[in-house]
Length: 486
Image 1 (cartoon, rainbow, N blue to C red):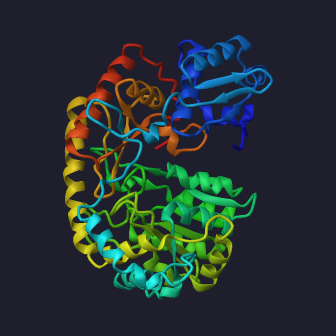
Image 2 (image 1 turned 60 degrees about the vertical axis):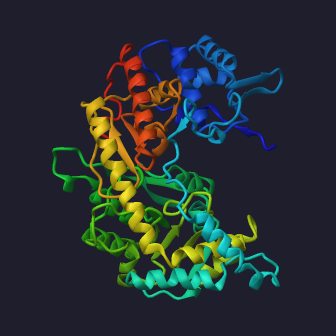
Image 3 (image 1 turned 90 degrees about the horizontal axis):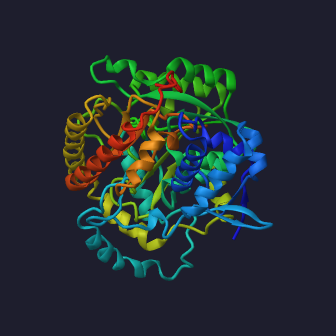
């Protein structure tokens, strides 16, 4: 097992604004516990020594000692003389806990249930497998049938694409990590949205990127929705002044805010990126989950012809539309970049499983009908969640989104981390707002998915209600922390 040493400086950055006006050692231990639960402190990481952390945080050593002792008592820390204190999860990891009646309900993953009929497609794909058994089975680029089917879908959406411009990956996260390794050098600036998909900035951080965030805000009920979305002034200035080598964007049903970037704004962003030589990596994993937006917007890569070849790289997958357990994604890029990605891939994996690719070939033929069914499910889920939250939390700001799978809810107070911890005590796992930002931002926000069943959403809102009531009995002072964020 590889041991990770976390410095006091790194831990301070992850802690953000952890003081809540109450007991300092309890606040510190609660924040470390939350960071461990949602993965921002990896398990088996060695935490800083007590004296080192107390000096960094400007608190007494007694405070850190008491916080560490409380973490040990609850199973989140193991200390061995001479080896330091290691972060742990008590019992089975939360990600391995299956939601069950009366058990833990996991809303940390915004993903739809498996598509009805998926097992039938898998059985049919087994019949296609003999035609591939004469080869080695190691496939770093993708089987021809699947690459052709993916290219056909891009052409149908208005972007001429050949199979040679497609690389099949092990899901979208694998695609992001591979692109980061190939396109980003240590110390290179990378433009990223704030908030954003957590595993994207983790992959970019791992590649050594210096992240430059640009704000994306959710719509506020009762206000002009056109004022929400991407801070275009900051985005264009960042491209011009920071000259990032790469920009990671999710312009359709952005995760977590649900916003969509308007067509004219896409054109201006693309032109600015082309002038600077910035490669835009556009994550389209949720782009087809339209609820009631209609066909007003075209996919971002449809504007790639306005810039130089290779200015836009698209990422897609079936993880959100079909099932998260079907680990097949893809990259759409120009041929020279595809060749670089294939050459770099073998350092981490030897290809996408053949049988899973054959299943996706079968599914893509019926994707229009699949998407229509998914949109109906999401429309019902979104409307149900909005009604629940309006009735139970009338002071929360719940933006109305026209697609995607999540609501980015403004709580009105910087208590997201504490609410997430309290919700766990009532059987609900939900990620706190800072999980989607850098350096502890977004404590006023909570991401709540609406892609679960109505019964599960009822349970989740009930748990949030109990957690909120317990939290409000011990109110947290509104320090104005991050009041300027969205």
